[in-house]
Length: 268
Image 1 (spheres, one colour):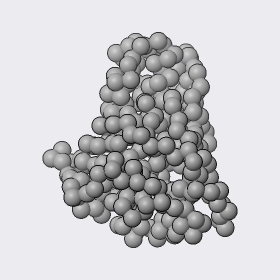
Image 2 (cartoon, helix red, strand yellow):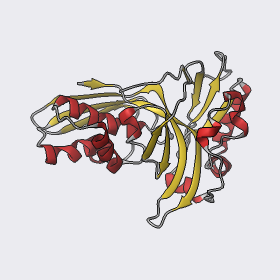
Image 3 (tube, helix red, strand yellow):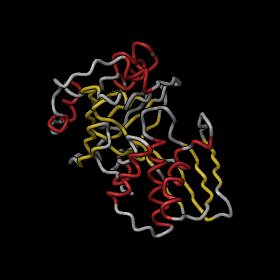
């Protein structure tokens, strides 16, 4: 079976508090975008994982697709499979590519073996794999709260806009991003802010990671400036970076090329 795991962008990211367990409480609007990896799973005589496209750093045996398979294999007695992942979405970019791959693995296995797992149960499994993973089960615009796994679907439609994405060749670790932020609960409600015209978002919606991350990595600030110079009406770093996106109300003609697409809402 074949699937096309998609990316997401964060429209605003607020770090509200640090929890006793070391995690942080956040608030962020997640929006799915049509930038896809390719995932194929077929029955096989042994468990095998292979990957092509953009290189994924780290041990292949620790890939989230394999972890997703193993999460379901024992309780549901799954037979071995071969998983082929072709990476197109940049890794470590704040675009949720790895989380999407994991979630789509759960979805494919659920369909392949007729496990009849509900969306709620799939989200529970996805939450074990990572905080962004549950979002890709429903794959609809949503407010992520708590540690990022509590999701509330929001009414947000950006089909009228183009999205430009620049991914500077730098890696921003999650620990690094959080280290530069002072949590505060004195923040406006993102669900109220996104009801305003997109042209007004820049004055009220922000990503709390941007200030420190861009200070440490000026390439990311330069990417944001390029999008603004090209006419984006809203720009932001996505997640903890390093990708930066811009929303355009007309097709831009960038001086330096970057990924450009229509941000259609995607359903799995």
